[in-house]
Length: 88
Image 1 (cartoon, rainbow, N blue to C red):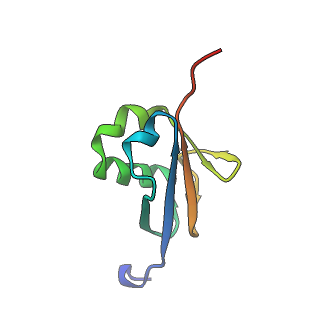
Image 2: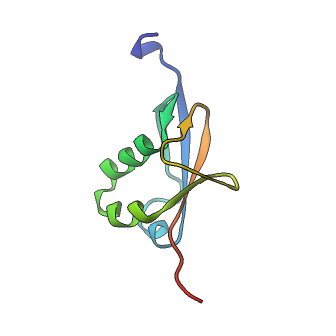
């Protein structure tokens, strides 16, 4: 399949914790299908380079499930970024 025929998917980004204040609440990216979570995160870093220290420590989730950065996204999804929480 040529690049012009490649299916595109929409990835909505939701963020919680410290990173939430650094990116827009209604952020959505259009990406190629079969994209790794790490590639989506790299795209975010390209747009918002100042989030790198926070993004490195974030967990990623789809729905209720924590996923690895090597996970493949192949359909429209909401990627949740969870900043670490301190306290006790």
